[in-house]
Amino acid sequence: MHQASFTTPASNSGAYGGNVYSSIQFEAKSTDFGGHFRSLWANIDKFGRLYAINDELHPQDIPAPLKEYMMLDPNTAVAVRYLNHAVTKPMCVAKVINFYLSKKMLKYTEIIKNFSPNTDGEILIAKREMTMAAIEIPNSARHRLLKKIAEQIAIARQKPNFAEFCSINRENHVAELLEMLNPLVTSMEDNNSLHESLKDIVTEAQRIGIELFSYPYDVRFHFPELNETYDPTVMVNLDPSLNANLVRGRVGMSVTPYIRLGFVNCEPMRMRTVCSAKVFTGVPGEKTIPENSSGSSS
Image 1 (tube, rainbow, N blue to C red):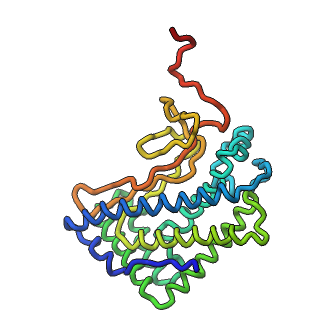
Image 2: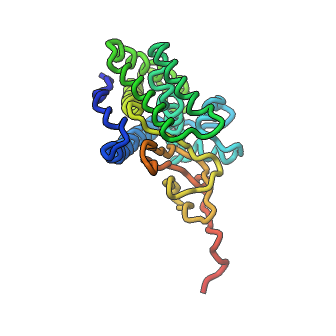
Image 3: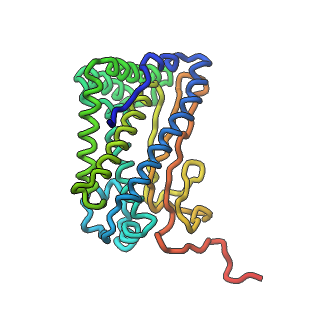
């Protein structure tokens, strides 16, 4: 149970070229990965709804790492509303899981971290070459480095101990998440369904991450920050009061990131938003009056 299945690494080789097929494959893969992420976020949303604690939560009782992951409003009164409103409390649980996975798993530097010193070293060298240059490196050089990372992951996947490594890695992530979520969810004692649901989520995230970084694609995750301007081109508003209609809508809470995939080995380079961010734009339970509404109407 909880075994992640992966496509054969060799099947990804077509993405390494700069031909028309590679561009077509990128478009197809962008659609595929968008579907994978939406499925993952939906399962995490369900987890939040099922297991969010019924007790009232207070910001002072939330450990600092959790506050960082949730990006809680520094205004205590507002934070209390988010933590305890029936709509947003499950979102707070989901946000912690989503942020953890994006930070600790869904990065090319993290997805197979500690598999071997050689693999870690090659990936970190590629990262340094991409991120430490004084000027933006050419797309051809960036593609070469992304290809190098994908090849390192492909090599690791063919090693006989890779499945065991993935299993241990999953268990470690589940244990860390369980400890982190403890103040936010129902009692974990003898709660087998909670454990199993979280294992399924981590397994799904690991499978997506390994497949994603087996391609030489430029992957960008971004969680909209508190008070960031609402952008309907990359965000979906979860606020039932429809604050997205406001001209100057601001993010009060982001639940999922928006994800961009790029294929830089073509001219012009291709960039696709494969998954929009889910955000909440208003204070829970507070109805917002649009700024352009008048005091009276005829």
